Amino acid sequence: MLDFIRAKPEDVELVITGRMADQRIIEEADLVTEMKAIKYYYQKGVESRDGIER
Image 1 (cartoon, rainbow, N blue to C red):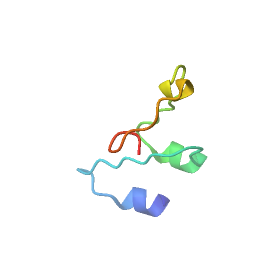
Image 2: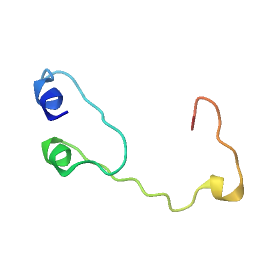
Image 3: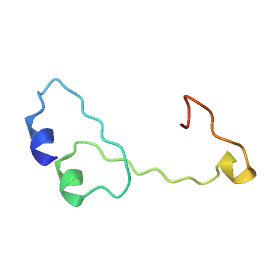
Image 4: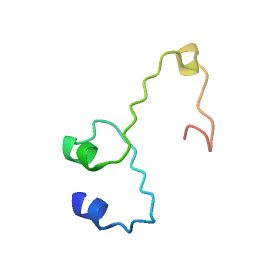
């Protein structure tokens, strides 16, 4: 994965999503964001929507 990241052209934006990113990927990245749900409508039983959450 690191070779793939390093080999990308300068004019290409690479977005990688997921959880528990390896520290080596975080160090190689220009931007890292961690999202944390504070309040989520699934907790009230609202089902996911095609094309949005699934």
